[in-house]
Image (cartoon, rainbow, N blue to C red; front, top):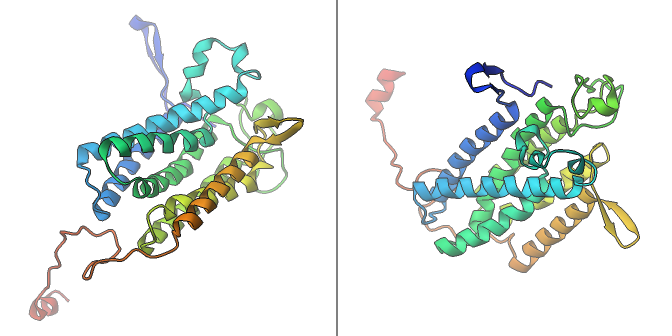
Length: 296
């Protein structure tokens, strides 16, 4: 609704700085993702140091950025970008990102990274899935501030009116619409907390990533009919909504992955170790009973 955080004019440079909430939310996602990757790499004993963890996080962010933008530009080239200056293709701060593009390009980048660093791919996919779904939950608020990715006009109590000059107002004209970006954000947060708890069950590596694909495919499919900015796939004489088609592909991939790898089986945890996030080197400090009584 209010895409810019502030506006600052620099007269001698003839420049106006207008940082956007969209970019701020992305920065928050990167910082949180780095912490998650660091904690999970330590817990799973993956041989990556702190610098490599940060490099991996930035690589995944860039892969998601390029993949998400490329997907959007390809599908919207005729409808939008052919009528704009070619530099608009790179104006990611104005919105126009597609999560399915990030989901497609992200794993390809992970495969290359894991081969170069000689680390196992499935655990890294699990870690990335946690970061992805949390980033999606936070990033949808960037869509909200930009006034995009909303649903049709509604009279329900959940309806929100967006100001003029936003993508939503082009068809809503000030009427309240379904804030589908908020619906999806809330559902993504639920899925994140489910995966966060599931990671402690010690399933075979890859299970978290597969459940993420299934869970997000279900979320996106359930909200697709409420989105007003869907892209379409043309297969022969058949036209289908792109989110439906891609969700089916992702779900089949996840199910095949689960059953072929028997990912529901539990990993053997060495005696004396637990499956929680605690540091393996963490020590337990026991307080003598007398000190306990004094402090009570």
